[in-house]
Length: 109
Image 1 (tube, rainbow, N blue to C red):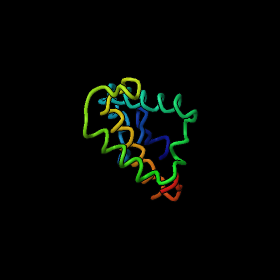
Image 2: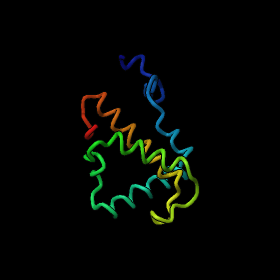
Image 3: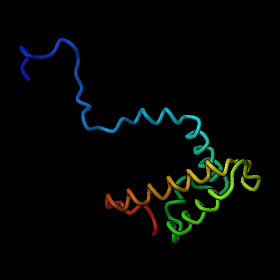
């Protein structure tokens, strides 16, 4: 674009891009999922160890279903909400699937 036809205001092409700010609608829920991640780091001593769990898909699927069948605080895991733990497992499965689709592996399947 030449300087003669430059718009008076700044311009940014966001067409077709994911609106990541929409996640702000779930701020409370995401905070609870972050608590699950933090608890896991404290319990297992690693931020990314979950990516290297053998048979990760099977195990995270099992955990997802366990947490979906109950609700409220999980006293065995520091009072974390079962719903947050279910969401964390769903996100772990999604992350592994996206990484695999993109050729990044992402962990054991």
